Amino acid sequence: MLKDRVISALIGIPVLLFLIYIGGIPLLIFVIILALLALFELHRLLGKMKLHVHPLLLYGSALIFPTIAFFAPAENEESLFFAGLIIYLLMHLLLLVLAFPKYGLGNLGASCLGSCYISVLLSFLILIRKIEPYGFQILLLVFILTWVCDIGAYLIGTRFGRRKLCSAVSPKKTVEGALGGLASCLIASYLFHLFFPILSGKVILLLAFTIGLVVQLGDLVESAIKRIAGVKDSGDLIPGHGGILDRFDSILFSAPAAYFFIKLIMF
Image 1: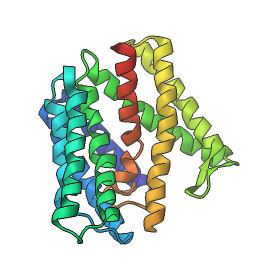
Image 2: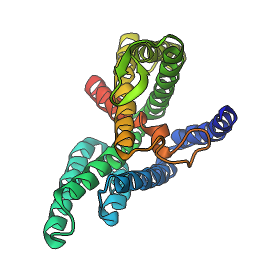
Image 3: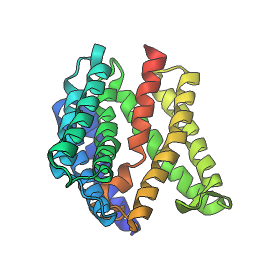
């Protein structure tokens, strides 16, 4: 298991860093593919919950929202993104009428929520990369802090974990692990600041604190979905790591949190 994890990381991380660096169309294609794979895993999980969603609407979101994020002008990208969300919601409501009574509110709700959970939140990777002039550095920082938080929480929780964080959702996660992940995040942000002083020391620590909190939430949300579906992993695409959702559940929350944080602080 450890060998598989190391090999996957040695292959996947350099590819990911390269795509973050060059941005543009390659990053857009990567996010779309990532969203499609994650939606495929979610589709299977929803099936285990006896929820039947319209595949065109579900998988179509992987094209709609990353594309809006990529092509929207920086000055009104939030407005266009919000418009896309409203139109997508209306499409679900229209399906309720046109396909009545095939798709109930539970099915449509699962489709809309699942699409927002994956396609919308992943699109913030593109929105962050578009931030001038430090989009690459900020996106790199988001990934580093997310990874460090996950690793720190695991190592500290395994060694010192005593008090359960949310036993009903994830029995193995502990308060000590969460605090360890948060502390690791803060330390990593300080070290990053020494090499890339793109933000002030106080701001980057506050960003790290924010990411350290939402990473824990992202992990718990995916754990709750898997627990409802009765599975251990969302998939088996990445050797030693599980599925796409297992590896990117935290970034789904840290990316939008970082985007809005940077927008509020810098603009």
